[in-house]
Length: 219
Image 1 (tube, one colour):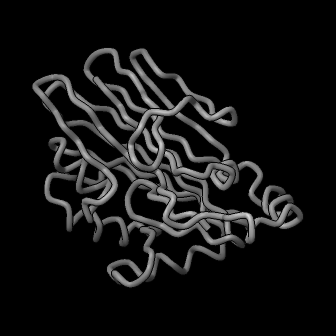
Image 2: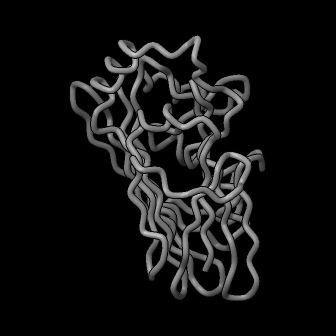
C-alpha cells in the first residue's frame, strides 16, 4: 500500500477497496474561496465514516452529519452544499465548502498540518499539497503482476483529480513526495498554466510511482 493524503483527511487506500476523489479549489484575491469535493466510495469503505473523530483510524466524512462535525471543528469554513447518490456498488458524495481565508483552507485540507502548506503574499501565493509520500511502498518483494492486474480491473475508472484557480493566472509544478520538482508522470493528465490548472491520474497508477507525488500551485 501507499500512504495517501486525499483532501479532507489522511486515508489509507485498502488494496481490496476503491475510492475516487476530486478537489477543485477556487481562491479569491483576499484568500477566501470555495473547495468543491466529490468522492466515490465503494461499499466496503462506507463504514469507515463512522470512525470520524477516532485518531487511531483513517476517517472519511460520509454522511451530512459527518461533514457538519468536520466543519464545526474548522473555524472559518462553511458547508454550503452537500449531496449524495447511491448505487449497488458505491456511494458518490459531493460537497462544497466555503473558506474565509487561506488558513481555513489549510485546516480543511490537512487538520494535522503534515502534508499541506500555504504561503500567501497579497494576491499571490503557493499551495503545496503532498498527495502521498513514499513511507509505505510496493517494493519488488510485494509486487505481484497478477494481483496488480486484478486490482486494475476492479479499480478501473477511479481517479484522483485536483484543480486550482486563483485571482489571476496560475501555474502547477509536479513534485515527488519530498517536494522536489519532477516531470509530469506519463500516466497523468495535467494543465500546468492558465486561469485554471489541474492534475488527474488513475488511482492504480499511483502504485507504480516509487518516490511519492505532490502538487505545487502558484498564483
